[in-house]
Image (cartoon, rainbow, N blue to C red; front, top):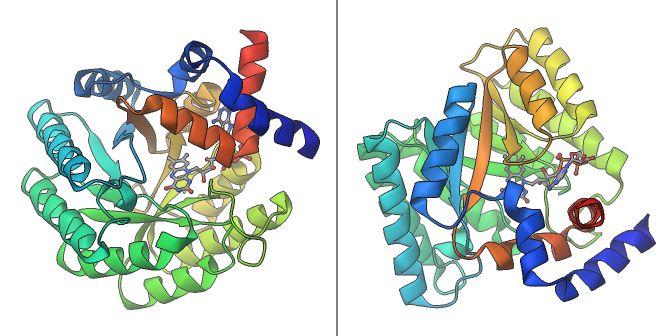
Length: 300
Ligand code: FAD
């Protein structure tokens, strides 16, 4: 399996852009704000809430950062005006973390001020480990001023996450998305074994539930979803305490099952002109997902 994954990661850059586009189509909501809104509205009608992500990470020019901020303001305005039930998700490296961290934190702060005026929530996605401290610190500062409008993400594959969550949950209520993590992190700071990641995922989930944090259970893994169902019952959680989260286009039968059982569910909707870079980076960074895409190519 490892050999297959490595082969896939090396082969992907040679897959024609048109094929990557065709295969990735179901994971993306087009290139425009209008297409993201249409996707979100359709999902709202199915009973899911959404979070919209403008593609484009690791931005190195200030003008590109400003363009991203302007587009996010347009998205927030549209969510508000068109009464779509959606938050937004953003990445620190889209907001200038590679250029100037202090300015990046201010850019995120200003956007949260704007979003709060329109009553739209903001989630700061978690990128790879050089940004973990920055992201958690930014979240920790913002949640004091905007407790209803800011969330962030923690990754179960990082060894530091369990103590991080315990610390965050100590002072006040956390609102965190819990995912496995998508980046290829060094072995000394991350679990590589799938069972170990799952074990840590459930340990973190338990702490969050015990501490009465709001948890976004972000996974498509049946094992984790079924364990989460049990824990939701064990802790007698209500809709104010949790939601499931899934990526657009992934495992729609599981999506229907979660909604069918009456659980709240949020779908992550990536869109934008940078879809090709996003698709390739995801494929290179995570051979498991690459494997899924290549399987898609083979069966297309
Ligand atoms: P896996 O074991 O990887 O997948 C379980 C099953 O789901 C697989 O067997 C496969 O059948 C299916 N599956 C999973 N992904 C795909 C796919 N792309 N295409 C087709 N089938 C698939 N990671 C971060 O590092 N930072 C973030 O901020 C972040 N935000 C996320 C937000 C949401 C809403 C979600 C759902 C994930 C997010 N992730 C993020 C990605 C996450 O860390 C995982 O890489 C990803 O969700 C796959 O892990 P899994 O829990 O679904 O388990």
